[in-house]
Length: 143
Length: 449
Image (cartoon, rainbow over all chains, first blue to last red; front, side, top):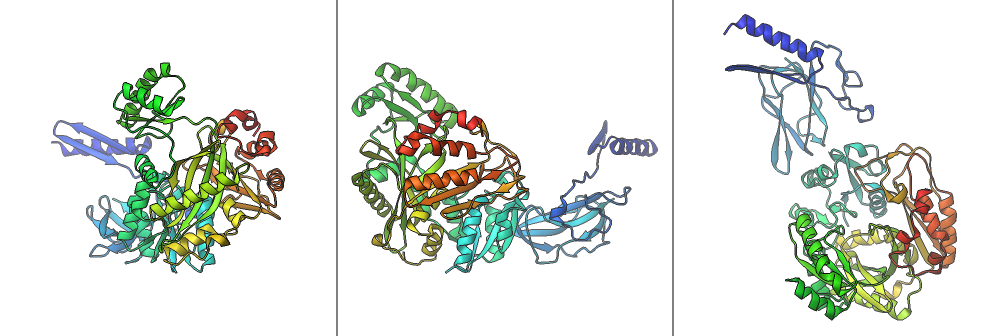
């Protein structure tokens, strides 16, 4: 496999993804396949002001640093949030996808994954805090 | 008494339950879906939890999230309101499993009354008159025999039925065979269960229901009857009143007696309603609703009893404070349901702009409406219940007409004009209309809404 050529193809696929405002691009060639996913951020109404810290995030959810995609991780379950050990803090670098926390609901652990490598930008909840559906738990700058 | 109750509902009934709880000194927990975040029931409650997105299946019917919210908040009871999980026996069981008191009857009672055939059989055993009819029909020839026995016209019904599917009216024997085939095929296609039974088709029946209250000590009282015959073509009620007009004292007393006996027979606890179809001097049991009903407010106005408060007291294990002799009807009350609906009662959506609801002497409004409320297609179209109370039925009708004229809800189509047309109608004013009254009134009034 020619890595230079492969990287060039991945780079042009990434550009295509960004320019075309696409969420996902997949290229396949024989035994080689790569999928590029772009985080598409949804606008959240001002009335539901969460996250509480707006550092780097404008009210409409857009990011101030367009070169760095930021994704918000939300709770799907009403429950109590517990951090996975070691607990992440703003600035923690994630070399790969990992469980950041879990929401305990009716005795069941519902894990919250980073979804890939990146950097924890913000943590919006405290250990043992009750959370409800849709509540933002973390914001992650995707690598 | 409870310390904290979770209200597993939205809209006017959640606001209503919240009020009753606060009056009793009980703290409240609201649940809401994402689009309901700014709703009145959320603002009025002491605490609130978002339990899911707009679709009811993922929010107001999301049992794990609702139970989790109750446990986290430290609630000791759950009031289900009406609709959603109110008649879900499994939900009542799950509440009990988690140490939460379900404000309603026992799960077994909910299950028994929720199954049409079981409910009818229990009532028959309790000597409650049920519509003459057959058991499951094995064949067309069985249907001929059963129809001859009860007398034409008859209604073929699917035992698994609902929503009018698998139902066929048969007026003469010649039509029975084809109607049987069509109803069977329809039932099979819709419910994967083609079994049919038949019932005598009552001509021009009225819908009259009796409110009952039962406690854990076996005390049962009735709180009078309501006439809910003004129904949309879909059989949803639009106008209700208490007491039922043009009803002989003998039949009224008989209905009350039957309802109390039936509630005793099932060991009923909480507020419940027995629905009857009344034709001439005959009354037939239709179904029992094991929850608070939308139209409970007309009974409250006439009897001066807060039924939701009674539900909470009974669920907390307290005794009924009211003996039958204490319950005396005073005057007459009428309720109009103001729904977000256009002509032909098709659901309307939009954002409420101008909101001016009536008030004053003898007028009660139960509503969650406010300017800026987004009327969502996800839920029931009810925006407000206007209840007028007067010394006489005529006075209540005039008061309602005036109140409807003072009702301004901008931004969405509503049933205000249709309700006003009902109040003006001579047949309604005479009293005792049958359930075909509103469909016959036509779409003319609705179209002008």
